[in-house]
Image (cartoon, rainbow, N blue to C red; front, side):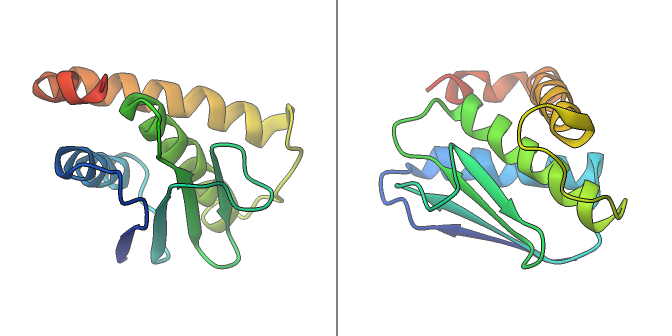
Amino acid sequence: MKIRLIKSDKSLRKEDYILIKDFIKFLYKEIPLKNDIIICCLSERVPNMTTGNSIPSHNIINVLTKNRLNRDILKTIAHEWVHEYQINCLNREIGKQIGGRNEDEANAKSGSLVKKFEIQFPQKNKVLYE
């Protein structure tokens, strides 16, 4: 599996970008996806997006990064990563946008993944809260 990270948000600092890359490696170890994936760091929202969205049919995750706390960015990436796993590995239907099995699971799992990352990599906590 190949992961491509696209940084279209020019405001991302080098240390933010490194943090995101490290978190993506962590995610892959925790919840391996079977398909290649593209993760786009955006400075503006795209249609049908709050702070993130996934397009499982194209294996794309979009995440809004501009003017957000790094910890929140990581949680969004994890949330959408879980959706990719649900659709492309577990073969689930997309489901409801509010509530429902997939959405509730993605919310809970993304929070626990970020906390686990914080515990495993305490040296990254300073940049997490920038």
